[in-house]
Length: 83
Length: 146
Image (tube, rainbow over all chains, first blue to last red; front, side):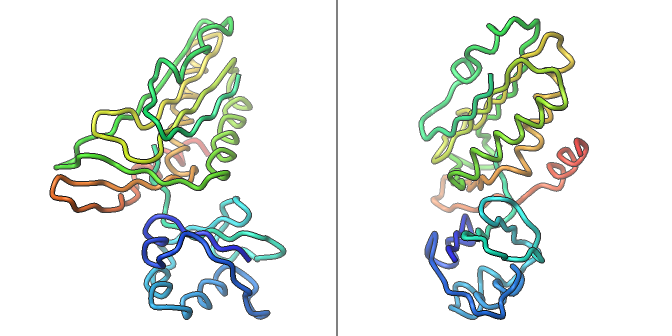
């Protein structure tokens, strides 16, 4: 799966995107965040407060408990602040 | 007429709103958001999610067309570094009568703030920078349209 990071999440992890083979027992976004948080200290820092994260699956905003299904792209970012 | 543009170059309300007054309506309404000096801010920097940004803004315009009798709508948003005093976003709508354009313009900017994937960083004169926190007042203004 392609992972996209933006704003403070991108800065904490140090890359804007990466491709990961998520384990078979990762079914929803919450599972993915828990697994990704163990990948590096940057990931752990970026994902330490899930309540302050927002998510998009294949470019549609979804909640933390959304199933990954056969989505190709998961984006993880802080609440949006445009305008 | 439906227009969405993400621009890395300076934007102007005049260019963003071009054509809205030629659609045969009696009303054009617009909102321009300007980079503001909040206690020593010299510039803001906007990041976005290419692809999702454009589709989410077009979805908002489609929703506005479904809710109000609009003849046209335009959203033009800056990305990159925007100096204090420069426009960040221009939203405009056209309709036969003023109520539709006025309400649709407020809807578009309120929902843009909570639905479109942009992130804003403030740069200060001393060289520091900080990501802007989401405002609960923005959530309140956005949710009144749902």
